[in-house]
Amino acid sequence: MIFPLSDISTADLDQKTQVKREFIIHSLNSHWTPHPEHGHLSYSIEKVIVKEILSLMCFFLNEEGAFDPAECFKFAHLHIMMTLLFEDAYDVDDPITHEIYDCLESRKEAMNIQLYNYFPILKPAYKEKIRQLEERSALLTKFQRILLNQHKDSYNPADLRDLVDQLLIFIEAGDDRELFDSDDMDSLLLELAGCGFSSVPALLTWLTGYMAAFPDIQTHMQEEMDQVVGRNRFPTLADQPFLPYTMAVILEVQRIVTLFPFLHPHRAVRNCEFLGNCTYQMNLF
Image (tube, rainbow, N blue to C red; front, side, top):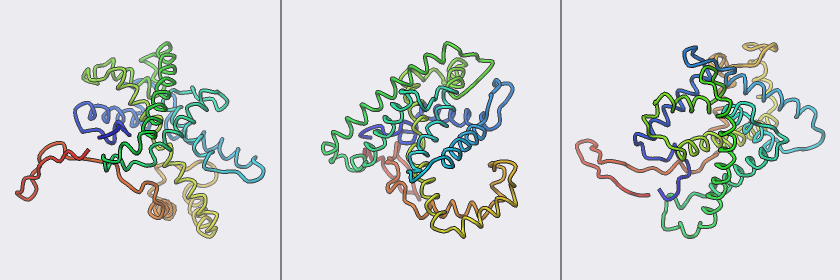
């Protein structure tokens, strides 16, 4: 690997990476279905998303004239991730919030071209982009450490508020197998904060565009939503099996739109045997 674009998705599957993945799966599952023995969680992911959707809808309805929904989706997504990580640390008018947004935006732009991860010989040509990515990642880490230190002052293991609290108790309980250090915490929080920052808003923007271009499909989706969900509540993941047309439209948009032309770079980390033939490890990156 030439540059650690994503600490979880592109890292070698060693013991530390496995522990990080275990923490993410465990903590996110706890937000969907909180367990009393793991402390009380004051909200679930769905509630956070619904609250943000309401704010976004109010903004759309009150906005006059033309505007770019993509930027609105990015701020909404950032708000959701920051709320899940640091509870109520996010304030749209806070300068730090805009700094974090700018850092993620610059980081995304620097990561748009990743050919040097597939063809290492091209790395010198992208030296400036790599430098920008390193600078923005360092600045994001600085902001996260400020929020993390503030969080530690009010941390209560009996009342888990967010993913940071769960990370603290995860380490305190020794579930990290004593593999995490401060850099690992920083990289893990950085990965979670920027998770889906570009892909989710892009997909929502495309969906909005297709709904405007094909109003009959939008009407059909709304009719299905009214029949299954009604007008008195928001849809949840539990409704998903009963919304086949809506899900088909979402999946079709994902099929048509190419959000990422390349998959994450990967490599074999040990010798493998396939159909009786030994395939030797290839250190491509």
